[in-house]
Amino acid sequence: MSAWHLQQESEEQEKESVMIFDTHAHYDDEAFDEDREQLISGLPSRGIEAVVNIGASIRTTENTLELVRKYPHVYGTAGVHPNETGELTDQKIDWLREAAASPGIVAVGEIGLDYYWDEPDRETQKYWFVRQLDLAREVKLPVVIHSRDAAKDTLDIMKAQKSEEIGGVIHCFSYGVELAREYLNMGFYLGVGGVLTFKNGRKLREVVEYMPMDRMVLETDCPYLSPVPFRGKRNSSLNLPLVVKAVSEIRGIPEEEVIRITRDNGRALYRLED
Image (tube, rainbow, N blue to C red; front, side, top):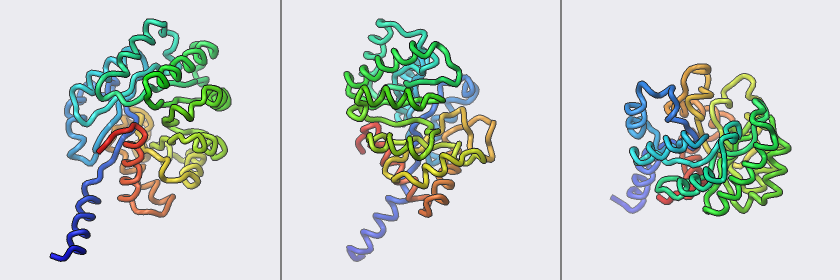
């Protein structure tokens, strides 16, 4: 067989072997209590290369550490969601620092601001957002940012804290092109999931059309935000091909290319080596 044919065969095999990277999931959620083991262990055989399980409180970070130890294709993050920051203390920040040093923990998050629920109070959320950004800088890990109905304050804090030096992803990006441009200019990735398929997902579709592909990562936020036609039902990484299809149609590129690019982006975001 000629060298050209060998190269073509190698490229085809590589294309076939590239699988989806789910950069944001919550498999420790009680929604998975009945079939967690079966579902997670079966992901690689169903086209999902890796999953990052996200810490959203001290308890869920503890759960995440257990999942990371149990499954070789599951990575994790250590952090406290803005609506859970009322539980934080200096001692718990010390615990998060230790957790962030554990094998398989690849980021600090999800952290940020959430004014939709508006609890705890905004000053408490801001204080612990800054503290967790400082923690990420200290442990040299990227951040997973949660921002809901808090566009200006989130960006102001991230700029004031020079978060471009830390790096990371804006999870479940829900703002418009103008704000996307700000974060892209800071070097952040944008998380794209099931909302892209919603009828009211116009802003995200505009962002996906606008943004460079090398800044896009796929995520589920499962068990939440299932793509159409499963909206309202439990989400899982197995639904990501529907998001891939939507990105493919918007960008006019093959689905295999979407999978390859976003997989490489996910690994770059979390600083994983092949």
